[in-house]
Length: 498
Image 1 (cartoon, rainbow, N blue to C red):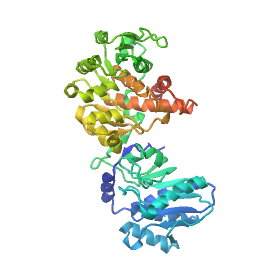
Image 2 (cartoon, one colour):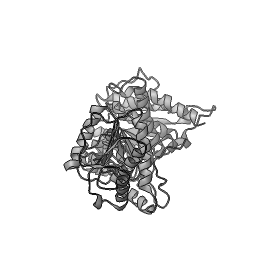
Image 3 (cartoon, rainbow, N blue to C red):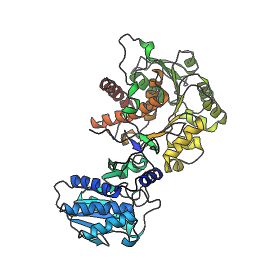
Image 4 (cartoon, one colour):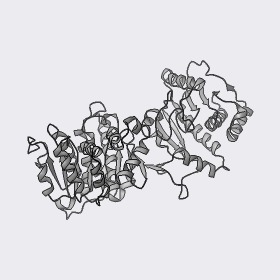
């Protein structure tokens, strides 16, 4: 079995790669790969296939596919949205070969009772503005026909109307059941609106790949990214071997958030977990997890800690501000989440404390928290999630996980990755607290910052997927259910890595 393709390239890089391989039959390879997938998607259906071909190279890919499928005796109807004499050179050649083989170009979608498959070859990665005119009409019609005929919709390279770099869906936008991405994965397929429009993603490398001279822009997170740290425990171990985590939070009426983080840290193997709560009326014992050592927030720093999580349920108060400042000055690996990030956003003095830390820091904002840190709107953040996460990592000299659909992890040196685990059941209170606890546990056990954040984010989503696969969601999935599944999955990864 070939290893999964984890490289992610943005449009500019893809165009440079294509230019370097200009003498190779890339369009023919793309059309062949797409045609083979189309055959599998059609299955036993004998109805006609609808191919929408646009005015550029994406249309050329579609015309190669159409020619090859006709050679296999499929009934293919091609609707062409361009002018043959104005096509780019490779696409023009693909069009000429299609016509020479007896193909016909239609001006509009014919009235067919039922389609076996619809292929979107309108725009690919080239579109940066909303589709208009007949192209927009065809996108709307294709989405409607999929619902009518319950047939697959295959997007070539990228669903038309979706920004391949950012994942922002323009209006209208193809909603594909499958996307075949050429050369590498594309970040826009995996984050923001991308997963709702790309469907199942297949990658055809076309015998072209990023290399040291022209590397990929980012990557998909898989367990391979942190496999070196998935090690079984020595039999001669004790609780001190696995570090102590401090969780600082739990302002008045919000102890639950801190408890979720602390429980998650314990379930992921921290030797000891100390919980410092700001609320003076907070409980001193967690009856569901009595192993947690609960104390007043000002006593937390007296413990021998190897990592600190600051922010879950912290609240906004004068005391909270002081504790964030203290956490930033502590010589410990640090996870900042929730109100710790909101406090950081309004106190410029704290920014210097974060940037100048010697020990690593992990930031795990959701889009609204990221917007406050950057001084922009949430819409701005969501418009380009990779840029937002990368700017946060650069500005604060730390590792950042911008949570959301397709969580983006960015490093201060400009590297970034996208996580593909997780599901809509995670859109509920407390999920971020669990993530911060998982990350804190790994830091306490000596994991480096980047590996700890990669693993925590990937495991967090995979644990939620495991719960959903077992029937616990996605609707009604709760944050408290995730830590147990994360523990099971984490141990399975370690057992499989031996």
